[in-house]
Image 1 (cartoon, rainbow, N blue to C red):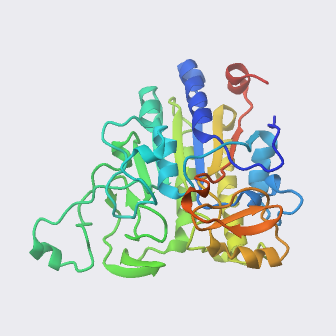
Image 2: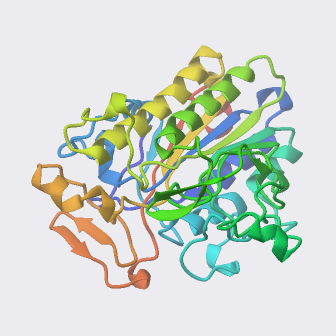
Length: 378
């Protein structure tokens, strides 16, 4: 099933459709409630997916293409924002992001929590319906890091704005998720360290720089993040095979956002530089998640949603890619002093408010008995 698209497909209406799926989940009996996997790419261009740009897209995305072929493609919708934090806020709360305390831009890795205590989230709502809930990936909604108890204590750790040796509060596990594994914000925002539930897995005793300098776990490398998140997601799915409860996995990836770091096995694969390689590796991550669902026998009763928060950034070297014959596709790529693209080419946007929307995609697979009976064949 595919929706009919306009000549210039721009966006996807994430929240109402997601809410409709959730309501359908609630109407099902316990045994028939579908698992939900929600994958959120970071800075992925619309035309970077072959299925959405078949004539002129040159990056191979076989797994996303399979989703598009087997499921539904939504390509005409609108978003309240074109950047990371407000997109994530809207997805998890269903609220217009600018009603929060954030009125522009995004949070950093040490920013305070944006989702207010007591605010209902999708994870909390599903948990009430008997779901196991997990978040694996880039949080980027703020954490309440532990403050120093004395100036003397802080002097022992120069460069630490907070006491990273202690658990933080008001993170994902306080917003409806049973578990969390990932990073605090974008991959170019410190602290550079893995988080397990409510604490860093290792103290950030080193300093590293991926665009921004900050405290880092000496063993943490940005290039390892996409493989690490993929591995954790596959492990979680594989472990649900014998579980009698449905699960919700929210998988906000940190790719292909900066720093653009494909692993060695993907370098040079696209023939279009690091960005094309990183998109291919992101596609492979989706493929591994799909394979895990298939191998665990869970695919038939799982709704798999794939979307992106906004289009790619100038760090992808758009003009260089265009010169190689790679057409980015029609639609808005990024708003806010960044770039727009239509079939006339690339042009800069004048200001954030020129179009508070970037595109995203949502593909839903699992045309199973649940899908047919609850959603219908239309």
